Image 1 (tube, rainbow, N blue to C red):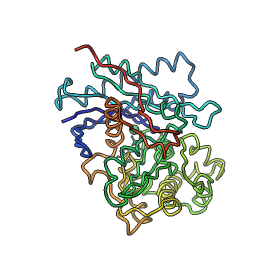
Image 2 (tube, rainbow, N blue to C red):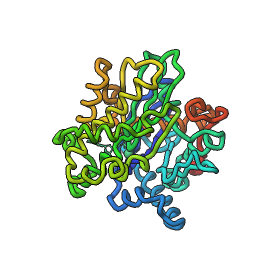
Image 3 (cartoon, rainbow, N blue to C red):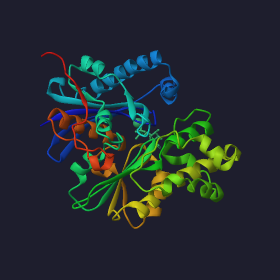
Image 4 (spheres, rainbow, N blue to C red):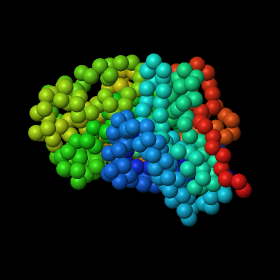
Length: 367
Ligand SMILES: Nc1ncnc2c1ncn2[C@@H]1O[C@H](COP(=O)(O)OP(=O)(O)O)[C@@H](O)[C@H]1O
Ligand SMILES: [Mg+2]
């Protein structure tokens, strides 16, 4: 039995997702999972983090460290004694990602020293930096996990629909292919907040989208974004697909027809996924396994099933994991590899010049 905890906070800024899992070779058993939502004030600060001054960023780093530590301790509660845990893998929260900058850089906050101090456990964090130091984009990191756990089977697409949506194609004899397909939940969340005057942080189960009609003219305007035609490797962020993009493409009318706009964007998200498979995957998957909070959006899942038919599209729940557990489990696995001094990325998918061991290790307490 090798137990590890993983912590993740993604571009949706919804909260800290934490998982406790047992790793035995390729086999992973999820023992506990939780997402601790952020209060709306913290969400707003995270969404505006690129505008923060250095002292505010430094404080945010510590505040997030406390939140990650609290989530780690909560996911452990009742499930496993702390002394049986080998390591915590913490992705942190990305406040800046600039792989194409003159000096490529990335910044994840959530101070690992705080997590190590509160839990007494070793923490591996800052995974993206090492990949960048080796000439990589610092992303995507999950494909190494996808390949290890799902790679020994038929061709399968692992699609994570978080704030941004990304895919990894794996299968026996296939070199993994991974890229961001485009928008995920970020813009859907913004529209749901606008439509409900802030009462809902997201479109629950996709019900709001189901109440609108897909606007074909708007859909055409949005589909023509060059990102969707750009071949991989490629990655994107929430900066590209936000309300300003709608203004640019469609003027301001979309604001007066919010249910239809939400319906259109939900459809667009599914369309970009299906379209990218046809354009860019070397083989079509036999199954699509959807993870991330987007798997809970029934309208989105319905569109995906219709667009990819006859390929089965299933939530990762089918494999026993709540949709938002997959990414924290992956970071627990990456951390285990790091402390065992084993390669934990696929340089071919990040563009790194050589394989390396990602992650900065903070020792645990003195036992
Ligand atoms: N019950 C639900 N119905 C519809 N969407 C949901 C539901 N629960 C979560 N989500 C969506 O999932 C998002 C969070 O997904 P997550 O995988 O954590 O993304 P990230 O990694 O970007 O934080 C929320 O912002 C929301 O859009
Ligand atoms: Mg999240």
